[in-house]
Length: 391
Image (tube, rainbow, N blue to C red; front, side, top):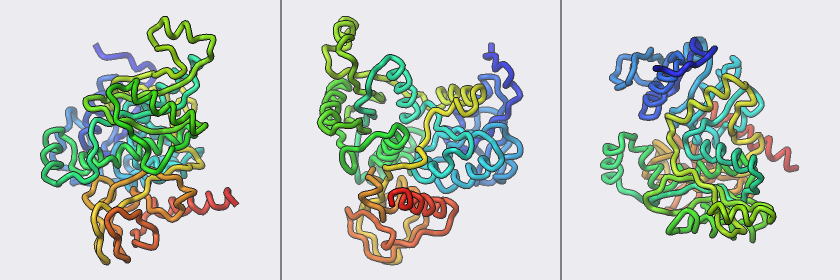
């Protein structure tokens, strides 16, 4: 028997994207009793999308806006997402994203301009939900942590093709997971959302034999640093997120009795993130609560960005086909104030190199020409805005 969606059975949920995650979300939306609206794609509408249910595929952003009551953006493309979200905000349509790439690139521009939130399910959203629980129980977070099973900054194309086919994800997605770009984006997003620091560019990412061991290591760093941090650990075979926290001394015997250890640091762990299954929780929260259903955003004044680093020597006039998930570039979390001329990796689609860039160098704005786009314009406005605020 299908769940009762209450008053939302006729609510039209539009989806941006037709990939692996979009297909799963479409199935869950209908299984939960909501109405699947149009599905926006940039491929021909009569392509074979392998969708699990009947869907109306469209190419026009305006049609998506006109025929949806809430939009789920899961394209993974920050440039495309920016255009769709801008139209949705103008039309007063709520947007739930599973797109950290968009959030750290231009998401801050839209904060306060409408209902825009990342959904629970991917690592940042799961950390946001875990944070709610931690704060409700009186914990004082020191570390917002992600767990990375494997990291290779320079994966080969043949390996990425193999794992892409095995996992059912695109080569760009698989590459961004493997070279750490996706992780850096997620933890930059988490830092902005919760107002934390990063300890150093690229984060620390210590190897650990357990989540608790890694969490305690990072908690000690955060304690020494004097402020909460966003970071990760390397632990093969795990898909967890965690929060390392303190609690009032009064509760130490209670927490010890409840097998949380003797302190002073305590680790709260969520051992799974079920992206397409969990995002429905955020969809219903937004439908029921409006702005109060916002789980997390990139904040209106982000302090952490994701800078582009060359994986190999890039010659003059070379065109970077794709920034995120490419074999040319990877991303690294940085403090924006310390690298104000950095190139956000989310803007690099189709960028032309104007000065030779050696392997390992951070790209600066003077190194490349970025094609015109709404995302580029909004990023430049965010930069100008931050400089005015800092003056």
